[in-house]
Length: 215
Image (tube, rainbow, N blue to C red):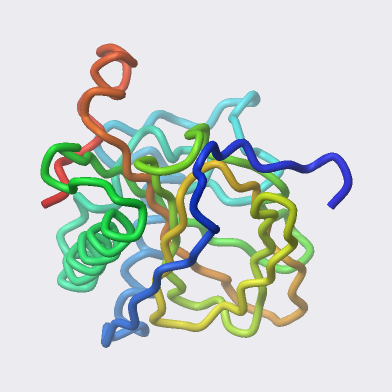
């Protein structure tokens, strides 16, 4: 993609890590759509009413716009807990690949969910700030099939074919975007960032009360 470049400083070739879960996606979809309504009404703890200048307004997803005001991994559902465990396993696998000691990083985790509808906004090309490992980002498909997510990894354009109940993980530093889809209904994904504790300490208190430890 012209003008879209990776900022990762890793010397290792880019790699996706993934995990297939056995969650009840019907239940999880219902749970997230109910929470979406609560976020829309600012009835989730820590979530403020919508303003005219929300970030990521072009996504069309209120739960995306409010991503910094809640952490999906603090929702009390077994399905989210199962995803938490899967994220931990993927990060450990990624650390082994990149030659990073998992325990010394004291990883912290934040997460949010996206509910989008065809033709009503989406997440276009964006990045999450980290210049590669040990900073990681990924997402989990609750109801996103069939659809694609596009990546630029160093000088390569990659297409990730989304599969429901599959979680993926990538190092940060590689731009990505939702591909178009044309089916009716909610496209639901859960996204997550993982970063070392020392980086968050440098970011200051404005980032506290949001990230949680990843074990």
